[in-house]
Image (cartoon, rainbow, N blue to C red; front, side, top):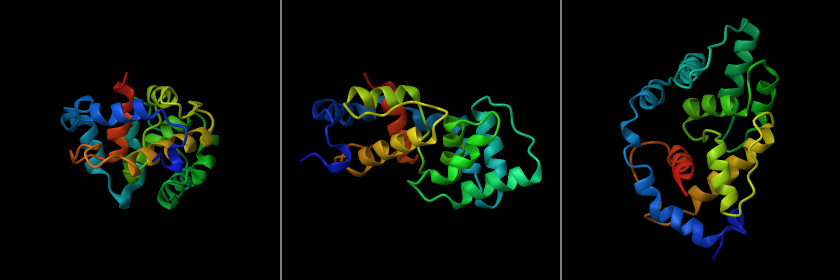
Length: 178
C-alpha cells in the first residue's frame, strides 16, 4: 500500500533507499562539527544557535538590529513542525534564502530537514516532485512534506537509530542515494 503522502512514488526506488540507508549514512554520527552545533543548541538562546549554524555552513553571521533579531528569534521559536509559513517573513532579509532558514530551523528545532538540492533531485528521481527553489519558502514546504512522508512511512528497519535527527538521516541519505 502506498501512503497518500507518497502517492505516485517509485516504490522500487523508495524501497531501495530504505535498504541502502544504513550504509549511506554510516559514519555520520562522527561529524563533530555538526554534532557540536546540534547539541549545543539552547532554546533560551536561539540567536546563538543561528550564529553557530551559519558558522557551520561557512556563512557570514548577521549583525542585525534588535528588532530584526527579535523577528528572527520569534519566527524560529513559534514555528510548529511541519509548517514553514512563519519562515516566509525571514525570506525578506538580505542574504537569507530557504536553505539558510532550513539550517536555522534544523538546529533550533532538530525536526526540520536541511533544504538540499541533491536531496530534492533524489526525491524527483523517486517520482516525488520536489522543486529546489531557494528563494521560495513554499518549495521548502514541499520538501519538508516529502521528508515527513518518508519518515512516517519508513519500514521498521528503514531508518537507522544513530542518535541524530531523522530528518538529517534522510536528507544525507537522499543526497548520497543513486
